[in-house]
Image (tube, rainbow, N blue to C red; front, side, top):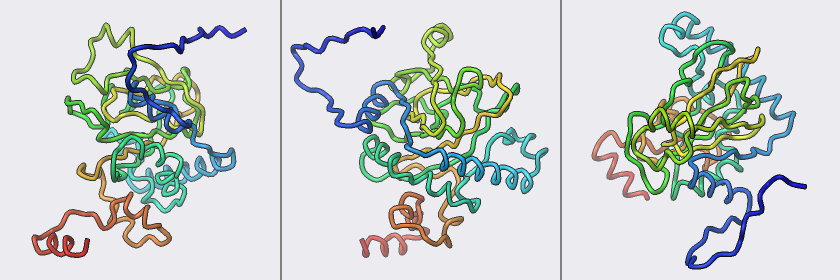
Length: 274
């Protein structure tokens, strides 16, 4: 016998209704209404193992290249910037994962681009720079009827209460101001999600990482997809300019060939070949 309540389906006075034809459109509806959803990525256990190993290799090389002390001094020790620029093919694949892009395409009308892809590590027993409430378009207090940007946090490890799963404020993408302390205490939700899923949020949804009380780091890969008018966090076109094997769709997604014109002549030339 299920403990779930039986939800009435009869209605009257309804002139318009959402249609969720599959799990992708249902996830899109959840995000539009709540500001977030958990979305199954469809990864196999072997694929998750490969991504985990690639993450560990990039993390070790990144710390070696930039220095543990330097990264710690600027509060960057638990972040790996622009994972797909570090030579591991899995992060190009992850950023352009077709199942994820099918969801993003239902949320952002028209063309969208990858604004950023960063590795995020929530270390056990320590504070980290994602442990404070924020939006992924920070310092902004406007809201829009449709997302300008969507972030997709890939759960490389399972998100659990004990390892500091992300907290969200449902519906905060529709409100300009950060909520009161009292509202936050009663309404914030900690999102539990299995490894291999994406925690997808409207970028204006307030969220933060929790305290990791487990014995192992909780790792994730954060993607932000935005309308093309928003500048990338790190310009990807230079790092990927010589990359072989990118599809036309990936080149557009990563911003190759869409950099702003440097002169009026260059702008007019681009207009002429559209």
